[in-house]
Image (cartoon, one colour):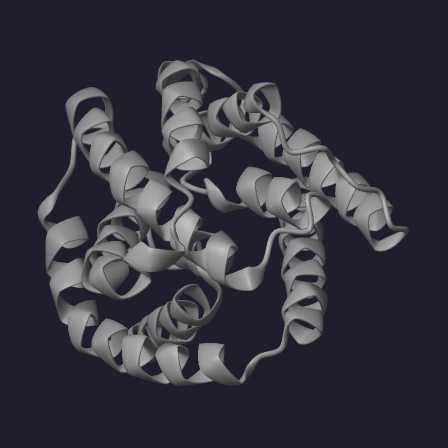
Length: 239
């Protein structure tokens, strides 16, 4: 039963990540925590997300905004050590409650047409928050998704820039997690078993991306954010 649930999670999350440029960690991490220990769930998510970014990088290279990408990476370098500190020492339950409430509040504001100005300072800030969430709870997507949605970024640039950023952030995060939190055989064996499903997700996701309009893409973004915030809040409170 656990294997069936695991494979379903990975396939669905892979399709979502490929078709939108985000969503694997947002969808996979909460459900992987039902099957694995926190360290294992985070590291499986990091490994498979990195594989997806590597597989897609040549296809989405033309859509990457390299100026924004550089600032996101620069900001994340400050956020990564903050996140690992939180992961090792802080109360993760309280952190999840705080993050979920922020995600829900900002998503509702976006749905009410709140818009954010895209500039160098905000690019850096988004990178800091994304980096800190990557090494703390394995979810770099929400800060980027909220930021790019608020700046009305086109879906092609959003997907391309986000996947390129993931290529960097996940590589650093895997090394950081392994050094400070350790790893085990379960992480790598489970990731290896999931690769065929990830490849199927890559194929299906690519086809879906070409068919999704900007309006549907935005609606889908809000649904994912509301789901993420709601799940984190409920899961944390019920512990």
